[in-house]
Length: 296
Length: 296
Image (cartoon, rainbow over all chains, first blue to last red):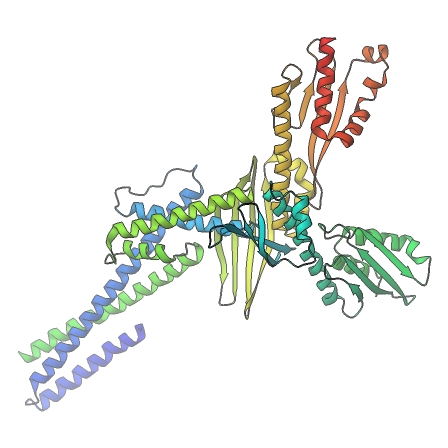
């Protein structure tokens, strides 16, 4: 744009010069038409200037409003600090204040969502609520499960997308959903997060060790994992069985080894491996075992 | 005459061309500033807020101030209600959330968030980076560099868990555990308070009702004190469990005179009672035992 307008000046000057010269040479050449041309050009330029001034003023106003909002917002976030120095008599201050509060509320709701809040929403018929249960593993957000709960006459789960192998009904009963819905949601969230975490761990095992570790068996609830690993020097295979009996946890409750060399599971090295697998997520434990050259 | 006219025109044209150039430059700077504003501050103008902004910035044609105000008010009220519902259901109140955009492109967004609030009496602040990567229809959200700040008083029970949570970047786990911990602390507070109200002559709470300690002592036996130490422990994995112990402060001479099982083995008996009766009933029977001696 800038380049074009500079060129515009030069070409305009050039044009005028040519015209002046030709006028001198041929003084009879329709001077009136020329004048009209010039005038219409001036008009065009005037319009452009006006448009630009309007655009600039609009931008200035928006930036000013933004800055005022930012100030207001900061004073909302840190109410203890000195009060905002906004001129209260400004007739827009009420609107600005509401806008600042609106953005703050939106951010707070977003934060509730991020920290794993239940994102509770009234259902369209108004009879019940819809609740979200977020899951994550090591910083990565995974599936979000949803439950629709009718509130009257008694609490009842009407719809949900929780996998059938999660014992929803018995969790509801054991945590006394009827009287303590928060306890129920907390326990359910624990179950779902543990399940998602185990699933993610199993997935990582398959991804990270697809060449060296063979997954022989696992189930949909991810409560059982049987792996085949190889001891590098002896070139013997070891069967690792991991049981996750506590479905609210993502670490196994029992680890056992099977090997042709019956003494191997009792060796100090493999006892260490056993406690490693008990205390660390399986993909990390395998990584450590590999680094120690306990497995190929 | 003609010559003079064109001369004036040329001057005017040059002047306006220059004005346009400078205006264009100014607009460009303002546009950049506005883009920066939008990046650094997550004031996302949506719906009613957008209307209000354009109202403030001079486009006052739409229905006037009253309509803009009432629409904005309505929206803010709805959001306030929503926030209250989330806070109540999640058991977590958020006071402030500041978001700073570090990187923004078509398929990647990196933001730095700082969220502070409280869960019952526990104050917290969490800071983390959130990146969102879009791959086709799917988008993956990941948290990195999680940092949790808590009040020094609460840190004792939380320290090993916090380092684990920060390492695992498990924001959801932190909040689940915080809530469970807070609920257990509230239970303890209620129980302590209940006993103090019921047995004011025997029960005292030297550290207040939110502390871990309740002391039982008969007014006529100032030297003999039973101390109930009720702590809530948080495991590295985020498990929350109460731990209740009884300590006896009985003068040596008294122990020598009455070497009975009832006094010397009080701590062990307390533990077996706990297993059978649960905390409330156990403490009640202890307090009764001490109070009864008053009558005999």
